[in-house]
Length: 64
Image (cartoon, rainbow, N blue to C red; front, side):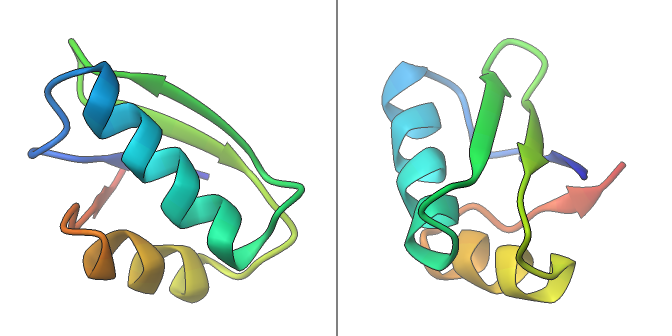
């Protein structure tokens, strides 16, 4: 699944986003691209679980 995160602007943000996703699914793979503000998430968790984790981390997503 792919998300657009308006507030992800740097590598530190990308690390926070990755930790948030992996708090739900430790085996998840997150590919973050801060310049485009896009993340690609490979996970067994539901989209709702990932969206909740991202919101709680301060990065409310827009589905792409």
